[in-house]
Length: 252
Image 1 (spheres, helix red, strand yellow):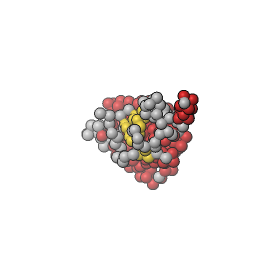
Image 2: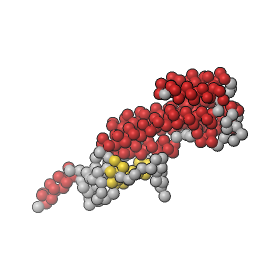
Image 3: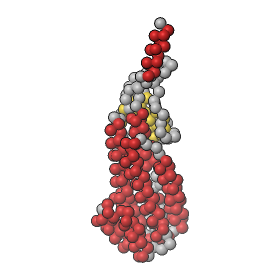
Image 4: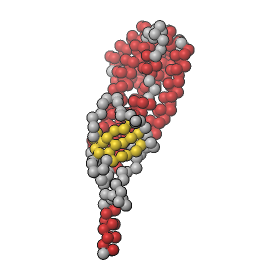
């Protein structure tokens, strides 16, 4: 009888372990620091947590498949970085003095320049963190799009500082167009020309930059999320609850 019990134990462990030492089944190890997996007992649902973001996913019953957890993890981590860690150039414009907000003089104002440059510096750290995020093989296309979107956003902010802080004349505005053209115009030439034409006429950064981001950068972030969710679905994992756009449940 002891041999039979021992043999049964070996078979039990080889099958992945419905429980270990009488405890609940253990999920796989997360790919990234700061991520935790919390499977709900006797369900196919797990909560994945990263910093202040948490979401429930249908990761399947034990024995758990790592790919399902890892694909869901990448979506959560990437979206957290987009929503909460991405420096916000649009918000900086909204906080600018009202008397300067629609004028070329805004870009010559020293306090505004200092805050803008601090966002660019912060972007260097964020982009480094974005590049360090680990992902499963099916999520690689999404990872590349996320990275490109962050880089585009950073490049736009850097271009404004490079060309418009020293001078706000027509030549500086033309150089903004020239710098941005190779990276963005092929996406939508009509919108690119329209936005740059307007900026060359009035140098209204508060009008130009938010519209440029909405037209050329936000769609790339949206595409990245869609690709990440496709990788989840291919791995057989989905959200367990509806996900509100741009909102996460915060840690209490």
